[in-house]
Length: 244
Image 1 (cartoon, rainbow, N blue to C red):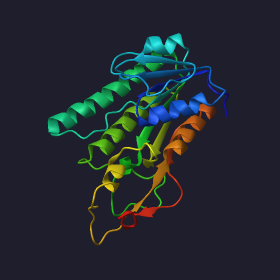
Image 2 (spheres, one colour):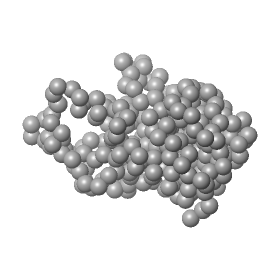
Image 3 (cartoon, one colour):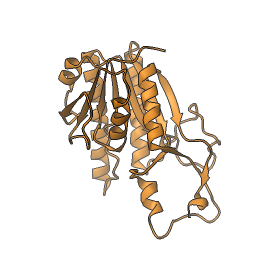
Image 4 (tube, rainbow, N blue to C red):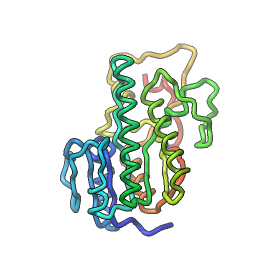
């Protein structure tokens, strides 16, 4: 276990998970400085936080150097589905460009620990998936589900980066669907529809994690400096038909 980092930067800080994480970090006495990086301002003020309105496809070295950042959490990600192939490709390229730009800035600024929030969708929805899926299961994302495939490509980029920069700690957290009072994702939107589409002969198990629990996991990884790849999910499963 390592001592808590003196300062933490969060990209995508104004998003759903970023806002929850910053609030959790604010409650921790261990952190000297929080740095929020996003194109939009955070939804609520946070004590002892510096805000940078930036597109992270561009360098952020100055923000990282000024506050002597030792840990960066990369949450910036375009999750919406493109309306056509061209838009899907453009979103994918932006997600990869932003990740690579942030990694390059971390190298130049001497950031020691990089945490990336990935998704359980990198495993793909396959009938032969083992239950439970461990973090050692093969990655088989569905090509026609851009969100999961983009996360898969990001993980590949991080693995290549880790091989080239073995002095850096890399943590990948593969989260399942996040639920909570402020959740807004494809599952929560589906639950508020008047009907749920399903396949009669198939009743897949689903897992969820509470939004504050995910923020707590991220905070623990930051504080302890834990490298590696980890699945993040709540206990047990909920079967699809139970939600209908």
